[in-house]
Image 1 (spheres, rainbow over the protein chains, first blue to last red):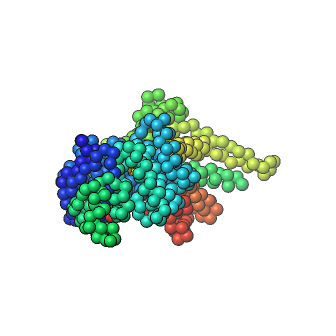
Image 2 (cartoon, rainbow over the protein chains, first blue to last red):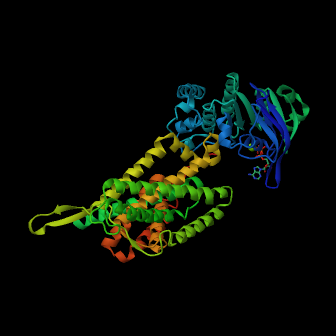
Length: 237
Length: 321
Ligand SMILES: Nc1ncnc2c1ncn2[C@@H]1O[C@H](COP(=O)(O)OP(=O)(O)OP(=O)(O)O)[C@@H](O)[C@H]1O
Ligand SMILES: [Mg+2]
């Protein structure tokens, strides 16, 4: 059974139809990437999965159960965790408080402690800034905090919306290494990216979204070699 | 010196009341970004509930309801206080649930106008005969009328300052409530969640924080503090104006000014603002002229808004994009 199974999902903002019947699946253990240009509907897809938007049509099954009508906090409590575009950091809280909120729904104090240490091992730079207000961090550091915080929820499915957005190439490399590590540790990942090149390198499978519709899908390596994709997203050579 | 001390004590007591009320304005603004105009009516509710409970409770211990020979036992006073807090927080909960929550996704202006509507509704319901009625009343004394005399100077120049017990109690009780709130907001997991909600409700929901419940609790806490302020206010000023009187409106307005001066949305700012407003008002009234006490307050507001539009402690943290 797929971990996440989306069937024929349509979402509108008022009269603007942002998603027109998309279907996609994420199997346990995979990294699946959703790529596409500006305004394709990638963020809309993630926001609908995490319950921030409600669909007009279609269904979303997580672990086989429908979640489309649930509230976002209930979905997060099921450990379907969404790191939104722009990172979703609480600038008015310290880094440490941000991290602790990641474990808001958990009661297993001992395991939280372990996950906390583990997350800080992945991002040593975050560890040096625990007592700083998160709003004073650089963009790269904020992205690290956002991912570390998501890990504290022990996600079954981790959804990342453009983690490379606005970051220096070195930091992007580091973030993608961590994404690989997290996946190697058994966490399933749904990765939204405009940087198709990088995304197709780490992902197992990919979906290409164009103005609200899935235009193509398949193993990431195959898509990376397809002429259409290379022309449209990989700088065409 | 003696006059100074007396004015100081009054300013501290009044400042505590402003601060208690300002906290409710600022907390609601913090999470929902609108001014809850009905907040000052919760203060009135607290005041009038205190009166209604008192005149019913006093006869139970054999005292005259309107003119008790002695204050009731302390447990009764404390009981009335707690009951007022609980009922006011229930009122806050209901107002949010029935009037504001259905408008969660509506433009802010709609919510603001609804708040004015709720305020008018409460004022008018409060004046109904079977509620509190439309005439002024006198709050029976619930505390002993002790005064603490302090002696100054010697021999011929000897002078006394009398510090009323009620001022000390207002200051102490408000101080404890504010300390409890401070600990709750800045030292507990729930408080961290509340601050997260006030930063961004969507991000907070993604953490698994039940945003609606957090908002309900914010209203309940703010309303309980407003109820406490109403209770303490009528103990200090027992001549109670009828529920829709402009004195209440002005009280709420000054507390709102306190919240703005301190930086609306900022908890510590509300407390600071409350005391600053009271100091300006009381010392201005004593040393310049008491006719212009409201002028001082609103001039200060204008001054602060000109110098620092976000209020004293309101430095909004910029969100990096
Ligand atoms: N709050 C909103 N109100 C109205 N329209 C919106 C809203 N958010 C997004 N849209 C529209 O929905 C469409 C999809 O937007 P979405 O943010 O999902 O795109 P995206 O693929 O994430 O793009 P980007 O890569 O630029 O982040 C766009 O046409 C956008 O203009
Ligand atoms: Mg997007």
